[in-house]
Length: 224
Image (cartoon, rainbow, N blue to C red; front, side, top):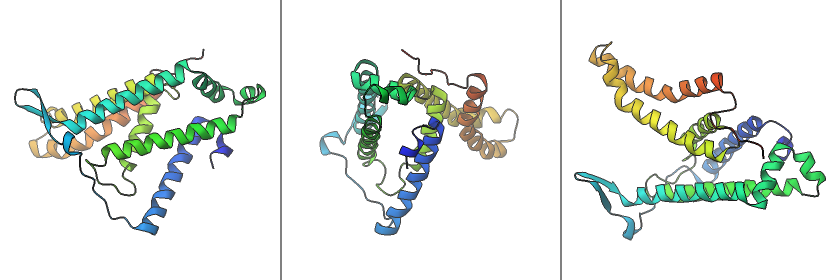
């Protein structure tokens, strides 16, 4: 499926990936059912830590944050400072030229895809004790990931990292303060109804604004 899209735009590859994911999810449900499975949190990481007086935070969630930061740092170093990363960036920019230099670009892209699949599996294992393991457990994150990539800039690890922080900040602040802000203009009942819906739209409004102002994203990848 994806080899036929190597010469197409990145957006075509993203849309095809979403389609394959939906197809595989339905196939898994048909073969093995949709019953969720639960995984326990490791006993040593099942407690909470005190961030400040009166504020507890689960240790496992801190582990997830640290693991995410470690993976982001690893990817940045791998893509930016290694020969493999140089070939990946060059192949994404001009695949025919890289192939002409003797690099098996299809094998390289296959390895990159496999590595990305491995990272997706790692993410699923990390969140399994918090969420249930079931087909489609990542569907709610797919669209957000797409928004993050568009806002941060396609092909930019720094953009993906900063875009994810920006999306998380906008989403959290919107859900926290939208109802209170709308009470200035609406009655309390209407504010409670409209607030959550408006908050869920903010990240997409932000994406539309970024696409209008900077179509390449806020932090696009730069050629070297």
